[in-house]
Image (cartoon, rainbow, N blue to C red):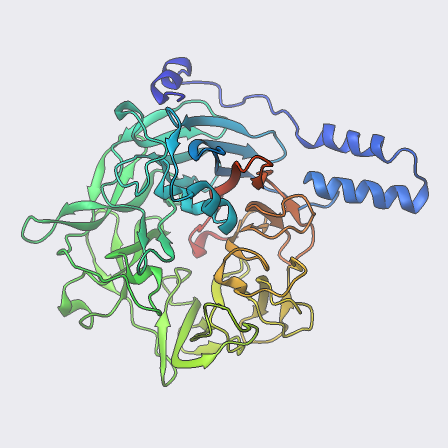
Length: 527
Protein backbone atom coordinates (compact mmCIF):
# COMPACT_ATOMS: atom_id res chain seq x y z
CA UNK A 1 0.00 0.00 0.00
CA UNK A 2 1.35 3.39 -0.94
CA UNK A 3 1.10 5.45 2.20
CA UNK A 4 -0.25 8.97 1.99
CA UNK A 5 2.18 9.86 4.76
CA UNK A 6 5.08 8.82 2.55
CA UNK A 7 3.73 10.91 -0.29
CA UNK A 8 3.48 13.88 2.03
CA UNK A 9 7.10 13.44 3.01
CA UNK A 10 8.16 13.20 -0.64
CA UNK A 11 6.16 16.18 -1.97
CA UNK A 12 6.77 19.69 -0.57
CA UNK A 13 3.60 21.52 0.45
CA UNK A 14 4.74 24.57 -1.50
CA UNK A 15 5.74 23.26 -4.91
CA UNK A 16 5.91 24.50 -8.47
CA UNK A 17 2.49 23.58 -9.92
CA UNK A 18 3.77 24.05 -13.48
CA UNK A 19 4.90 20.45 -13.83
CA UNK A 20 5.85 19.31 -17.28
CA UNK A 21 3.09 17.78 -19.38
CA UNK A 22 3.81 14.52 -21.12
CA UNK A 23 1.49 14.72 -24.13
CA UNK A 24 -0.41 11.44 -24.38
CA UNK A 25 -1.71 12.02 -27.91
CA UNK A 26 1.45 12.89 -29.85
CA UNK A 27 3.00 9.41 -29.61
CA UNK A 28 -0.36 7.72 -30.19
CA UNK A 29 -1.03 9.75 -33.34
CA UNK A 30 2.52 9.07 -34.61
CA UNK A 31 1.95 5.37 -34.07
CA UNK A 32 -1.35 5.55 -35.96
CA UNK A 33 0.35 7.19 -38.93
CA UNK A 34 3.02 4.50 -38.92
CA UNK A 35 0.42 1.71 -38.76
CA UNK A 36 -1.50 3.19 -41.69
CA UNK A 37 1.57 4.05 -43.80
CA UNK A 38 0.94 1.21 -46.25
CA UNK A 39 -2.41 2.64 -47.33
CA UNK A 40 -3.14 5.53 -49.67
CA UNK A 41 -5.69 8.30 -50.09
CA UNK A 42 -9.08 7.87 -48.53
CA UNK A 43 -8.20 4.47 -47.12
CA UNK A 44 -5.21 5.89 -45.27
CA UNK A 45 -7.28 8.83 -44.02
CA UNK A 46 -10.00 6.45 -42.75
CA UNK A 47 -7.36 4.19 -41.16
CA UNK A 48 -5.76 7.08 -39.27
CA UNK A 49 -9.14 8.41 -38.16
CA UNK A 50 -10.22 5.02 -36.82
CA UNK A 51 -6.89 4.56 -35.07
CA UNK A 52 -7.02 8.04 -33.51
CA UNK A 53 -10.57 7.47 -32.33
CA UNK A 54 -9.59 4.18 -30.69
CA UNK A 55 -6.58 5.87 -29.07
CA UNK A 56 -8.78 8.62 -27.60
CA UNK A 57 -7.15 11.34 -29.73
CA UNK A 58 -9.63 12.28 -32.51
CA UNK A 59 -8.63 15.22 -34.71
CA UNK A 60 -11.62 17.31 -33.58
CA UNK A 61 -12.07 15.74 -30.14
CA UNK A 62 -13.86 17.63 -27.40
CA UNK A 63 -11.33 19.46 -25.19
CA UNK A 64 -11.07 18.81 -21.47
CA UNK A 65 -9.43 20.70 -18.65
CA UNK A 66 -8.81 18.76 -15.41
CA UNK A 67 -10.28 15.29 -14.98
CA UNK A 68 -9.93 13.29 -11.74
CA UNK A 69 -11.04 9.68 -11.56
CA UNK A 70 -10.76 6.53 -9.49
CA UNK A 71 -9.58 3.31 -11.13
CA UNK A 72 -10.16 0.02 -9.30
CA UNK A 73 -8.96 -3.44 -10.24
CA UNK A 74 -9.41 -6.83 -8.60
CA UNK A 75 -8.53 -10.45 -9.30
CA UNK A 76 -9.99 -13.63 -7.87
CA UNK A 77 -7.72 -16.60 -8.38
CA UNK A 78 -8.87 -20.01 -9.53
CA UNK A 79 -8.81 -21.20 -5.91
CA UNK A 80 -11.10 -18.35 -4.80
CA UNK A 81 -8.82 -15.70 -3.24
CA UNK A 82 -9.26 -12.02 -4.08
CA UNK A 83 -6.66 -9.24 -4.33
CA UNK A 84 -7.34 -5.62 -5.31
CA UNK A 85 -5.70 -2.30 -6.11
CA UNK A 86 -7.14 1.19 -6.37
CA UNK A 87 -5.69 4.52 -7.50
CA UNK A 88 -6.69 8.16 -7.85
CA UNK A 89 -5.56 9.64 -11.16
CA UNK A 90 -5.61 13.18 -12.53
CA UNK A 91 -5.50 14.08 -16.21
CA UNK A 92 -4.97 17.64 -17.48
CA UNK A 93 -5.99 18.12 -21.08
CA UNK A 94 -4.02 15.73 -23.29
CA UNK A 95 -1.34 15.14 -20.65
CA UNK A 96 -0.73 11.62 -19.46
CA UNK A 97 -2.63 11.05 -16.21
CA UNK A 98 -0.65 11.19 -12.96
CA UNK A 99 -1.33 8.80 -10.08
CA UNK A 100 -1.79 10.71 -6.82
CA UNK A 101 -2.39 7.87 -4.35
CA UNK A 102 -2.65 4.13 -4.65
CA UNK A 103 -3.92 1.42 -2.31
CA UNK A 104 -3.76 -2.33 -2.52
CA UNK A 105 -5.00 -5.28 -0.46
CA UNK A 106 -2.51 -6.44 2.15
CA UNK A 107 -2.87 -10.13 1.28
CA UNK A 108 -5.26 -12.43 -0.64
CA UNK A 109 -8.62 -12.97 1.04
CA UNK A 110 -11.26 -15.66 0.49
CA UNK A 111 -13.92 -14.50 -1.99
CA UNK A 112 -16.83 -16.93 -1.46
CA UNK A 113 -19.38 -14.39 -2.78
CA UNK A 114 -17.45 -13.86 -6.03
CA UNK A 115 -17.16 -10.08 -5.50
CA UNK A 116 -14.65 -9.53 -8.29
CA UNK A 117 -16.86 -11.38 -10.78
CA UNK A 118 -19.97 -9.47 -9.68
CA UNK A 119 -18.09 -6.17 -9.94
CA UNK A 120 -16.94 -7.00 -13.46
CA UNK A 121 -20.11 -8.51 -14.84
CA UNK A 122 -22.26 -5.60 -13.70
CA UNK A 123 -19.75 -3.03 -15.03
CA UNK A 124 -20.62 -0.66 -12.18
CA UNK A 125 -17.38 1.15 -11.43
CA UNK A 126 -18.90 3.30 -8.68
CA UNK A 127 -19.82 0.28 -6.58
CA UNK A 128 -16.17 -0.22 -5.59
CA UNK A 129 -16.84 2.26 -2.76
CA UNK A 130 -18.44 -0.54 -0.72
CA UNK A 131 -15.13 -2.44 -0.66
CA UNK A 132 -12.31 0.10 -1.12
CA UNK A 133 -11.20 3.29 0.71
CA UNK A 134 -11.36 6.02 -1.97
CA UNK A 135 -14.76 7.62 -1.45
CA UNK A 136 -15.95 11.16 -2.32
CA UNK A 137 -14.13 13.17 -4.99
CA UNK A 138 -14.12 16.77 -6.22
CA UNK A 139 -12.31 19.18 -8.57
CA UNK A 140 -12.12 22.96 -8.12
CA UNK A 141 -14.09 24.97 -10.70
CA UNK A 142 -10.89 26.37 -12.23
CA UNK A 143 -9.31 22.91 -12.43
CA UNK A 144 -6.30 23.80 -10.28
CA UNK A 145 -6.96 21.38 -7.42
CA UNK A 146 -8.54 18.05 -6.49
CA UNK A 147 -10.06 17.03 -3.16
CA UNK A 148 -10.76 13.45 -2.16
CA UNK A 149 -11.84 11.34 0.81
CA UNK A 150 -10.17 8.20 2.13
CA UNK A 151 -11.81 5.97 4.75
CA UNK A 152 -12.61 2.32 5.35
CA UNK A 153 -15.01 2.98 8.25
CA UNK A 154 -18.15 2.28 6.19
CA UNK A 155 -17.06 -0.59 3.95
CA UNK A 156 -19.58 -3.41 3.61
CA UNK A 157 -16.89 -5.69 2.14
CA UNK A 158 -13.42 -4.44 3.20
CA UNK A 159 -11.27 -5.84 0.40
CA UNK A 160 -8.80 -2.93 0.79
CA UNK A 161 -8.33 -1.07 4.07
CA UNK A 162 -6.50 2.14 4.91
CA UNK A 163 -4.09 2.89 7.73
CA UNK A 164 -5.23 5.56 10.23
CA UNK A 165 -2.72 8.10 8.87
CA UNK A 166 -4.10 7.57 5.36
CA UNK A 167 -7.71 8.35 6.25
CA UNK A 168 -9.26 11.79 5.95
CA UNK A 169 -10.17 14.44 3.40
CA UNK A 170 -7.20 15.48 1.26
CA UNK A 171 -6.18 18.30 -1.08
CA UNK A 172 -3.77 18.02 -4.02
CA UNK A 173 -2.88 20.27 -6.92
CA UNK A 174 -3.96 19.13 -10.37
CA UNK A 175 -0.37 18.29 -11.31
CA UNK A 176 -0.11 15.92 -8.32
CA UNK A 177 1.93 18.23 -6.09
CA UNK A 178 1.13 19.80 -2.72
CA UNK A 179 -0.70 16.84 -1.19
CA UNK A 180 -1.99 17.66 2.32
CA UNK A 181 -4.67 16.49 4.73
CA UNK A 182 -7.58 18.88 5.36
CA UNK A 183 -9.31 16.99 8.15
CA UNK A 184 -11.04 13.75 9.15
CA UNK A 185 -13.28 11.82 6.78
CA UNK A 186 -17.04 12.13 7.05
CA UNK A 187 -18.82 9.85 9.50
CA UNK A 188 -21.83 9.71 7.15
CA UNK A 189 -21.48 6.87 4.61
CA UNK A 190 -21.46 8.09 1.03
CA UNK A 191 -23.64 5.20 -0.17
CA UNK A 192 -26.85 3.44 0.80
CA UNK A 193 -27.93 -0.05 -0.28
CA UNK A 194 -31.56 0.10 -1.44
CA UNK A 195 -33.89 -2.78 -0.68
CA UNK A 196 -32.68 -6.27 0.18
CA UNK A 197 -29.16 -6.04 -1.16
CA UNK A 198 -30.40 -4.43 -4.36
CA UNK A 199 -29.30 -1.24 -6.14
CA UNK A 200 -26.96 1.22 -4.48
CA UNK A 201 -27.42 4.97 -4.09
CA UNK A 202 -24.33 7.18 -3.98
CA UNK A 203 -23.12 10.60 -2.87
CA UNK A 204 -19.95 10.45 -4.94
CA UNK A 205 -18.81 14.04 -4.95
CA UNK A 206 -17.22 16.80 -2.88
CA UNK A 207 -18.59 19.97 -4.53
CA UNK A 208 -16.55 23.15 -4.07
CA UNK A 209 -17.62 26.78 -3.90
CA UNK A 210 -17.12 28.92 -7.04
CA UNK A 211 -13.85 30.32 -5.66
CA UNK A 212 -12.62 26.86 -4.69
CA UNK A 213 -12.26 27.86 -1.02
CA UNK A 214 -14.98 25.70 0.59
CA UNK A 215 -16.11 22.17 -0.06
CA UNK A 216 -19.51 20.92 1.10
CA UNK A 217 -20.68 17.43 2.09
CA UNK A 218 -22.75 15.54 4.65
CA UNK A 219 -21.41 14.47 8.05
CA UNK A 220 -22.73 13.55 11.46
CA UNK A 221 -23.21 16.44 13.88
CA UNK A 222 -25.34 17.46 16.87
CA UNK A 223 -29.05 17.95 16.30
CA UNK A 224 -31.47 20.12 18.30
CA UNK A 225 -31.12 17.94 21.39
CA UNK A 226 -27.42 17.24 20.97
CA UNK A 227 -27.87 13.81 19.40
CA UNK A 228 -25.88 12.91 16.28
CA UNK A 229 -27.71 13.21 12.96
CA UNK A 230 -26.77 13.77 9.32
CA UNK A 231 -25.98 17.45 8.70
CA UNK A 232 -24.64 19.72 5.96
CA UNK A 233 -21.08 20.87 6.67
CA UNK A 234 -18.38 22.85 4.87
CA UNK A 235 -14.60 22.50 5.04
CA UNK A 236 -12.20 25.36 4.30
CA UNK A 237 -9.36 24.07 2.08
CA UNK A 238 -6.98 26.78 3.35
CA UNK A 239 -7.57 26.77 7.11
CA UNK A 240 -9.12 23.32 7.54
CA UNK A 241 -12.02 24.86 9.46
CA UNK A 242 -15.18 22.74 9.54
CA UNK A 243 -18.56 24.52 9.80
CA UNK A 244 -21.87 22.77 10.51
CA UNK A 245 -24.61 24.55 8.56
CA UNK A 246 -27.69 22.61 9.75
CA UNK A 247 -28.95 21.15 13.02
CA UNK A 248 -31.46 18.53 11.92
CA UNK A 249 -32.93 15.84 14.16
CA UNK A 250 -32.16 12.19 13.39
CA UNK A 251 -34.59 10.39 11.09
CA UNK A 252 -35.03 6.75 10.14
CA UNK A 253 -35.49 6.10 6.43
CA UNK A 254 -36.57 2.66 5.23
CA UNK A 255 -34.69 1.92 2.00
CA UNK A 256 -36.96 -0.72 0.53
CA UNK A 257 -39.66 -1.00 -2.08
CA UNK A 258 -39.73 -1.14 -5.85
CA UNK A 259 -40.09 2.63 -6.32
CA UNK A 260 -37.38 3.78 -3.89
CA UNK A 261 -34.96 6.31 -5.38
CA UNK A 262 -31.51 7.20 -3.97
CA UNK A 263 -32.54 10.54 -2.49
CA UNK A 264 -35.18 8.75 -0.39
CA UNK A 265 -32.47 6.77 1.42
CA UNK A 266 -30.33 9.73 2.51
CA UNK A 267 -31.52 11.98 5.37
CA UNK A 268 -29.71 14.80 3.55
CA UNK A 269 -29.03 14.41 -0.17
CA UNK A 270 -26.38 15.98 -2.40
CA UNK A 271 -25.51 19.42 -0.97
CA UNK A 272 -23.86 21.75 -3.48
CA UNK A 273 -23.12 25.43 -3.98
CA UNK A 274 -25.51 27.42 -6.18
CA UNK A 275 -23.68 30.71 -5.74
CA UNK A 276 -20.65 31.99 -3.86
CA UNK A 277 -22.26 31.69 -0.44
CA UNK A 278 -25.41 29.54 -0.82
CA UNK A 279 -25.74 25.76 -0.56
CA UNK A 280 -28.65 23.82 -2.05
CA UNK A 281 -29.62 20.35 -0.77
CA UNK A 282 -32.54 18.00 -0.36
CA UNK A 283 -33.76 16.53 2.93
CA UNK A 284 -36.52 14.79 4.79
CA UNK A 285 -34.90 15.68 8.13
CA UNK A 286 -35.85 19.34 8.48
CA UNK A 287 -38.41 20.37 11.11
CA UNK A 288 -41.94 19.50 10.01
CA UNK A 289 -42.96 23.14 10.36
CA UNK A 290 -40.71 23.93 7.38
CA UNK A 291 -42.10 21.39 4.91
CA UNK A 292 -44.89 18.80 4.66
CA UNK A 293 -44.45 15.83 6.95
CA UNK A 294 -42.62 12.92 5.33
CA UNK A 295 -41.94 14.85 2.09
CA UNK A 296 -38.49 15.22 0.59
CA UNK A 297 -37.95 18.95 0.15
CA UNK A 298 -35.27 21.22 -1.29
CA UNK A 299 -33.62 23.82 0.93
CA UNK A 300 -30.98 26.51 0.69
CA UNK A 301 -28.70 27.71 3.49
CA UNK A 302 -25.92 30.29 3.67
CA UNK A 303 -22.35 29.07 4.14
CA UNK A 304 -22.35 30.49 7.68
CA UNK A 305 -25.41 28.42 8.64
CA UNK A 306 -27.95 31.25 8.47
CA UNK A 307 -31.07 31.69 6.29
CA UNK A 308 -32.23 28.09 6.11
CA UNK A 309 -35.11 28.30 3.63
CA UNK A 310 -37.25 25.78 1.74
CA UNK A 311 -37.74 26.17 -1.99
CA UNK A 312 -41.30 25.89 -3.31
CA UNK A 313 -42.27 22.37 -4.29
CA UNK A 314 -42.74 21.97 -8.08
CA UNK A 315 -46.39 21.39 -8.88
CA UNK A 316 -46.67 18.00 -10.57
CA UNK A 317 -49.29 16.97 -13.07
CA UNK A 318 -52.23 15.06 -11.65
CA UNK A 319 -51.23 11.55 -10.54
CA UNK A 320 -47.48 12.24 -10.78
CA UNK A 321 -44.77 12.44 -8.15
CA UNK A 322 -41.79 14.78 -8.26
CA UNK A 323 -38.22 13.43 -8.10
CA UNK A 324 -36.10 16.61 -8.33
CA UNK A 325 -32.56 16.55 -9.66
CA UNK A 326 -30.09 19.16 -8.51
CA UNK A 327 -29.86 21.40 -11.51
CA UNK A 328 -32.29 23.88 -9.96
CA UNK A 329 -30.97 27.43 -9.59
CA UNK A 330 -32.19 29.97 -7.08
CA UNK A 331 -34.58 31.35 -9.69
CA UNK A 332 -36.24 27.95 -9.92
CA UNK A 333 -35.09 27.18 -13.45
CA UNK A 334 -33.79 23.71 -14.16
CA UNK A 335 -34.70 20.21 -15.22
CA UNK A 336 -36.40 17.59 -13.08
CA UNK A 337 -37.71 14.08 -13.42
CA UNK A 338 -41.36 13.40 -12.64
CA UNK A 339 -42.43 9.90 -11.75
CA UNK A 340 -45.93 8.73 -12.64
CA UNK A 341 -47.61 6.74 -9.92
CA UNK A 342 -49.51 4.41 -12.25
CA UNK A 343 -47.75 1.18 -13.19
CA UNK A 344 -47.36 0.41 -16.85
CA UNK A 345 -45.81 -2.24 -19.05
CA UNK A 346 -42.36 -1.06 -20.02
CA UNK A 347 -41.66 -1.17 -23.77
CA UNK A 348 -38.63 -3.17 -24.82
CA UNK A 349 -38.45 -5.46 -21.80
CA UNK A 350 -39.18 -8.98 -22.96
CA UNK A 351 -40.10 -12.23 -21.18
CA UNK A 352 -37.66 -13.28 -18.49
CA UNK A 353 -36.65 -9.72 -17.66
CA UNK A 354 -36.72 -8.95 -13.95
CA UNK A 355 -38.41 -5.58 -14.44
CA UNK A 356 -41.72 -6.22 -16.16
CA UNK A 357 -43.52 -3.20 -14.76
CA UNK A 358 -42.29 0.10 -13.39
CA UNK A 359 -43.25 3.66 -12.67
CA UNK A 360 -42.94 5.80 -15.78
CA UNK A 361 -40.48 8.70 -15.56
CA UNK A 362 -40.37 11.74 -17.85
CA UNK A 363 -38.12 14.81 -18.09
CA UNK A 364 -39.55 18.25 -17.37
CA UNK A 365 -38.26 21.82 -17.57
CA UNK A 366 -39.00 24.10 -14.64
CA UNK A 367 -39.22 27.83 -15.34
CA UNK A 368 -40.31 30.47 -12.81
CA UNK A 369 -43.92 30.10 -13.99
CA UNK A 370 -44.30 26.83 -15.85
CA UNK A 371 -43.65 23.12 -15.68
CA UNK A 372 -43.04 21.96 -19.26
CA UNK A 373 -43.01 18.28 -20.16
CA UNK A 374 -40.06 17.51 -22.45
CA UNK A 375 -40.48 13.76 -23.02
CA UNK A 376 -43.34 11.34 -23.42
CA UNK A 377 -41.54 8.01 -23.77
CA UNK A 378 -43.55 5.96 -21.24
CA UNK A 379 -40.45 4.24 -19.82
CA UNK A 380 -39.23 3.75 -16.27
CA UNK A 381 -35.65 4.97 -16.77
CA UNK A 382 -35.75 8.38 -18.44
CA UNK A 383 -33.62 10.72 -16.31
CA UNK A 384 -33.23 14.50 -16.57
CA UNK A 385 -29.55 15.40 -16.10
CA UNK A 386 -28.70 19.05 -16.61
CA UNK A 387 -29.55 22.28 -18.36
CA UNK A 388 -26.91 23.25 -20.93
CA UNK A 389 -24.40 26.00 -20.29
CA UNK A 390 -26.35 28.28 -22.65
CA UNK A 391 -29.57 27.54 -20.69
CA UNK A 392 -31.37 26.73 -23.96
CA UNK A 393 -31.30 22.94 -24.08
CA UNK A 394 -31.99 20.24 -21.52
CA UNK A 395 -29.92 17.05 -21.50
CA UNK A 396 -31.29 13.69 -20.39
CA UNK A 397 -30.73 9.97 -20.80
CA UNK A 398 -33.30 7.48 -22.07
CA UNK A 399 -33.52 4.13 -23.83
CA UNK A 400 -36.41 5.15 -26.07
CA UNK A 401 -36.16 5.30 -29.87
CA UNK A 402 -38.09 8.44 -30.84
CA UNK A 403 -35.90 9.17 -33.89
CA UNK A 404 -35.45 5.63 -35.20
CA UNK A 405 -31.75 5.57 -34.27
CA UNK A 406 -31.82 3.36 -31.17
CA UNK A 407 -33.46 0.08 -32.22
CA UNK A 408 -31.64 -1.97 -29.55
CA UNK A 409 -33.05 0.18 -26.75
CA UNK A 410 -29.66 1.09 -25.30
CA UNK A 411 -29.18 4.03 -22.97
CA UNK A 412 -28.49 7.18 -24.98
CA UNK A 413 -27.83 10.83 -24.22
CA UNK A 414 -30.38 13.24 -25.74
CA UNK A 415 -30.90 16.99 -25.75
CA UNK A 416 -34.04 18.99 -26.37
CA UNK A 417 -34.89 22.69 -26.24
CA UNK A 418 -36.73 23.98 -23.21
CA UNK A 419 -40.10 24.12 -24.96
CA UNK A 420 -39.91 20.47 -25.95
CA UNK A 421 -38.75 20.84 -29.55
CA UNK A 422 -35.74 19.97 -31.72
CA UNK A 423 -34.98 16.65 -30.05
CA UNK A 424 -31.47 15.30 -30.76
CA UNK A 425 -29.94 11.91 -30.00
CA UNK A 426 -26.33 12.74 -29.15
CA UNK A 427 -24.89 9.24 -28.73
CA UNK A 428 -25.19 6.14 -30.90
CA UNK A 429 -24.09 3.60 -28.31
CA UNK A 430 -24.98 -0.03 -28.94
CA UNK A 431 -23.95 -3.52 -27.91
CA UNK A 432 -25.68 -5.01 -30.98
CA UNK A 433 -28.23 -7.15 -29.13
CA UNK A 434 -31.49 -5.68 -27.76
CA UNK A 435 -31.02 -4.15 -24.32
CA UNK A 436 -33.07 -5.57 -21.46
CA UNK A 437 -32.56 -2.76 -18.93
CA UNK A 438 -31.88 0.39 -20.95
CA UNK A 439 -30.67 3.15 -18.63
CA UNK A 440 -31.41 0.95 -15.63
CA UNK A 441 -27.85 -0.39 -15.81
CA UNK A 442 -27.11 -4.12 -15.71
CA UNK A 443 -24.97 -6.81 -17.37
CA UNK A 444 -25.10 -7.13 -21.18
CA UNK A 445 -26.86 -7.25 -23.50
CA UNK A 446 -27.19 -3.51 -23.66
CA UNK A 447 -25.22 -0.70 -22.06
CA UNK A 448 -25.94 2.40 -20.03
CA UNK A 449 -24.72 5.89 -19.10
CA UNK A 450 -23.98 6.42 -15.42
CA UNK A 451 -23.54 10.18 -15.20
CA UNK A 452 -23.05 13.22 -17.44
CA UNK A 453 -22.49 16.95 -17.05
CA UNK A 454 -21.13 19.91 -19.03
CA UNK A 455 -18.01 22.01 -18.49
CA UNK A 456 -19.23 25.64 -18.72
CA UNK A 457 -15.87 26.87 -20.01
CA UNK A 458 -15.12 24.40 -22.83
CA UNK A 459 -18.82 23.43 -23.27
CA UNK A 460 -17.59 19.83 -23.42
CA UNK A 461 -20.03 17.17 -22.17
CA UNK A 462 -18.36 14.53 -20.00
CA UNK A 463 -20.00 11.20 -19.28
CA UNK A 464 -19.36 7.82 -17.71
CA UNK A 465 -20.60 4.80 -19.65
CA UNK A 466 -20.14 1.05 -19.96
CA UNK A 467 -20.89 1.23 -23.69
CA UNK A 468 -18.16 0.44 -26.22
CA UNK A 469 -18.31 2.90 -29.15
CA UNK A 470 -14.73 2.22 -30.29
CA UNK A 471 -14.57 -1.54 -29.82
CA UNK A 472 -11.90 -1.26 -27.14
CA UNK A 473 -13.77 -2.01 -23.91
CA UNK A 474 -16.54 -4.61 -24.34
CA UNK A 475 -16.91 -5.21 -20.60
CA UNK A 476 -15.91 -2.07 -18.69
CA UNK A 477 -16.95 1.43 -17.67
CA UNK A 478 -15.03 4.39 -19.09
CA UNK A 479 -15.04 8.19 -19.06
CA UNK A 480 -15.86 9.93 -22.37
CA UNK A 481 -16.02 13.50 -23.65
CA UNK A 482 -17.83 15.04 -26.61
CA UNK A 483 -19.12 18.33 -27.99
CA UNK A 484 -22.68 19.25 -26.93
CA UNK A 485 -23.97 18.38 -30.41
CA UNK A 486 -22.63 14.82 -30.07
CA UNK A 487 -19.56 15.23 -32.30
CA UNK A 488 -15.92 14.82 -31.27
CA UNK A 489 -16.53 11.81 -29.02
CA UNK A 490 -13.35 10.64 -27.32
CA UNK A 491 -12.57 7.98 -24.73
CA UNK A 492 -10.56 9.43 -21.84
CA UNK A 493 -9.74 6.30 -19.85
CA UNK A 494 -8.56 2.80 -20.69
CA UNK A 495 -9.73 0.37 -18.01
CA UNK A 496 -9.59 -3.18 -19.38
CA UNK A 497 -12.88 -4.31 -17.82
CA UNK A 498 -13.87 -7.89 -16.99
CA UNK A 499 -11.70 -10.82 -18.11
CA UNK A 500 -12.29 -14.51 -17.45
CA UNK A 501 -9.05 -16.47 -17.59
CA UNK A 502 -8.67 -20.05 -18.89
CA UNK A 503 -7.94 -21.50 -15.44
CA UNK A 504 -11.16 -20.04 -13.98
CA UNK A 505 -9.61 -16.94 -12.42
CA UNK A 506 -11.32 -13.61 -13.12
CA UNK A 507 -10.01 -10.06 -13.16
CA UNK A 508 -11.75 -6.69 -13.45
CA UNK A 509 -10.59 -3.10 -13.96
CA UNK A 510 -13.20 -0.33 -13.92
CA UNK A 511 -13.50 3.45 -13.72
CA UNK A 512 -15.51 4.64 -10.73
CA UNK A 513 -15.94 8.19 -9.46
CA UNK A 514 -14.95 10.80 -12.03
CA UNK A 515 -15.30 14.57 -11.95
CA UNK A 516 -13.92 17.45 -14.00
CA UNK A 517 -13.26 21.15 -13.63
CA UNK A 518 -16.43 23.17 -13.98
CA UNK A 519 -18.60 20.35 -12.68
CA UNK A 520 -21.81 21.89 -11.28
CA UNK A 521 -20.56 25.44 -11.43
CA UNK A 522 -23.47 27.63 -10.26
CA UNK A 523 -25.62 28.77 -13.23
CA UNK A 524 -25.00 32.46 -12.59
CA UNK A 525 -21.30 31.90 -13.29
CA UNK A 526 -21.77 29.94 -16.52
CA UNK A 527 -20.51 32.25 -19.25
